[in-house]
Image (cartoon, rainbow, N blue to C red; front, side, top):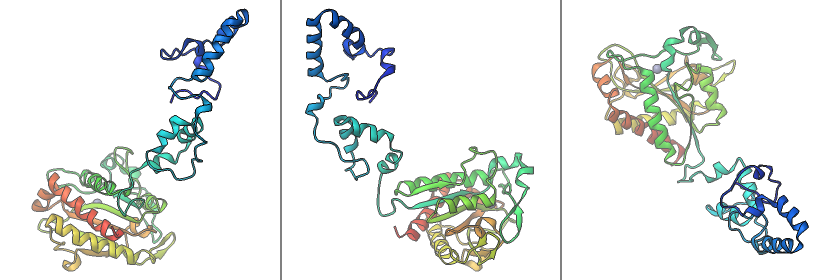
Length: 334
Ligand code: ZN
């Protein structure tokens, strides 16, 4: 609604509203004329009382309005905001001024509405052009490590960073459709490189995420095939203390591994994890610094021709995203 007729409208003097009566735009002039011709004033007052001062939207005059709308802090049935706004200027002002309205109006679907998942697309395609920045050492609690790495590629040059971002976006769409709040650590090229691994962890912590998944693909010798999920080891040092997340992260990882096999048909890694598809590591800053349940998934081996063919396929990537999503949803109890 462009006007609030309970407040001064300095802009109305210069703006021309074609559907607005001339006498409300030229009220000063009308008063001047009325002072000279009392009969004109009487007629003007009659019109004002009938239509409501400054009315431009067909609202009834103030005397005809219903009792005051409930305060905006009280719950309102969905869809009532616009009705209240058109019936009451105060409701209109509070609705448009409240920053919480967009959240309140978000679709609340299913039992997972309001839960938060942080998705961390591994690496960043821009890292190749920012090697000095990503080589900078950062504190991971238990030691120091490079800010970030370039990631691997297939033999044909498909970047791991492009793969991880694609799967992450697909995963985000599936989760958001269930009403889950999704936060990405980045969506390159929204930032030229990184984030650094310590910041990736902090983003999950700051979001108070119910689950965090870092999406990757591996780059090892031909013949090594399959996926594996990396779980945080119990570590303590500096800002790293994973004692509280080791258990729930394992549950998250087991659910993702099981669902990933079901949706993609891929077998667990034949080169790590002893056929379980699960590997525990204590050297990853993104896990060590996390205070929220978190796992990495290596979706396949980009350097193996058969795995690379899968990773290259949009249809397979959708199945991969679905498998990860199903694991997360199961973990969240949805
Ligand atoms: Zn990676």
